[in-house]
Length: 339
Ligand SMILES: *[C@@H]1O[C@H](CO)[C@@H](O)[C@H](O)[C@H]1NC(C)=O
Ligand SMILES: *[C@@H]1O[C@H](CO)[C@@H](O)[C@H](O)[C@H]1NC(C)=O
Image (cartoon, rainbow, N blue to C red; front, top):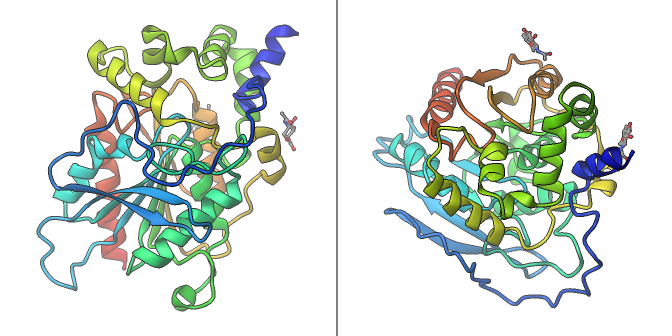
């Protein structure tokens, strides 16, 4: 039973955190202690939310945009737990920029170099989706493709459920601007992760114990092998795992959600506009989201999931990061032709 209780902590990895006194509203420009050095062509700015809090944005412009007609949709990236904008900036931003897409990677509140709100958790599915919507509304000119990884995928799903059902409404009253598409990358399924927890418990007790220790007890922050097993392929070089482990530890200053409250907003409601194209992308060696979770997300959106072999949960940082990027690029090409 003790094991079960610990396991349930996956649904609330920060359950055991002692109550943090009301955080002082950090005014701006929180500096990570392990700063991510931007790549050539990237810039960082802060998007001011209606609350006055700043959201970190890493931007990289698309190369070789020929004319208006072949204009590619901007890409907006949303990270998951323990990550921030930097996870996309490492490989995928240069890749998609090279292929002509303007790229924007956001850090959710309380993560990366974004401000932290007062309180013990960074927000809810609703507030994070609203922050992304505010950014898109104010900074993005044409409907973007919104991409989310892991828990960021759940935020993207929540956003998708709230997009109005006509392109025309975009400029107008609708709070969640229209999208050209949505990409769910190793995403937590629409019902949340309680299904994952039960499946692990019955089918893979050892893995369940490890993933719990790794995520709930945040042991991945101190154990290199565990960090590797949780997020990366065995082939990943240790010096890279070490670097990302430090960035993960530094970038998540507060939990993204109160996962017990999160459960009340699940499952995610279906999309109002089912014409929005969705790609569900998974990784064969994902230690966190299993094949059944991937299938569930695919069924929810009525699409066949694409599952990439030889890659782990951190598909954008893992050694074969190019495989997932290529799969998205192929899907984007079809999306453009369908337009
Ligand atoms: C979350 O909700 C689901 C379905 O509503 C329920 O089966 C599950 O026990 C809940 N989990 C927690 C941790 O509250
Ligand atoms: C997921 O779906 C695929 C294709 O329909 C199927 O072959 C596979 O058995 C499913 N896996 C699980 C674990 O449900």
